[in-house]
Length: 158
Length: 109
Image 1 (cartoon, rainbow over the protein chains, first blue to last red):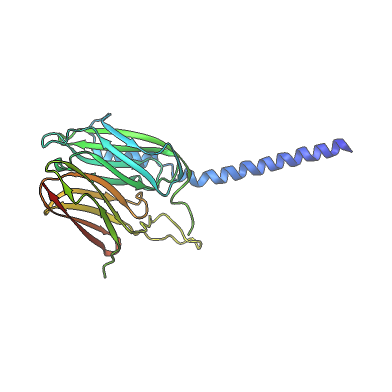
Image 2 (tube, chains in turn red, blue):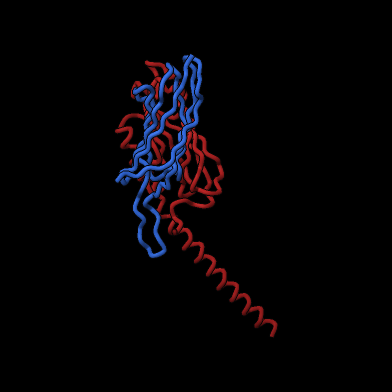
């Protein structure tokens, strides 16, 4: 009698486990729909247009762990003297796993003084965010930051 | 019919000539991304602020383009060099004819 009960319980446990896996799978599928690294690569390609891109000079700061993806403070700073001959022209911020990769673009001038910009962005998933800067001499530099998002933006119902 | 909303600018009212000042500009806006659905499964159309520009005595010193990835009530913090006394004008423009303008004056010594 005891053996049968054990057997049943084991079977029941297995079924529950199966359900759990199914639930995890269904939870992950909608997120996969946002896994659009190719889109981000394409957006970056569109910006640089085949020009070489170097790592460095650009620092992107986002919290490493984000509780709510709807409002994430993002800071970009580019190492540049910001003089009339050597300044940062544009900064593009691209997210790898957002439904639309572009987040924002800023246009600076020597009169900006510094190349520091802070804003608040939405992040749909845990991902890497890129910042691409174009200098006045036309060269491209990039920097990135990775973050973990617990509550995703964009997916919630109204 | 153009829409508008409340905006706010935070920046120093006086500065030394040649110093770098920090400007914080915020606009009240939902920034509806266009990727959300109602419970009925209908997609909510995108309604965001698309551009933000700052002119310093009618010379453009800063411009930003926003996309759906910018959070609600867009805040942008940037810097500029205080070159002369005058007015800074801030302009936001977006979907559905959204437009907002704000001004701040600065005394440079």
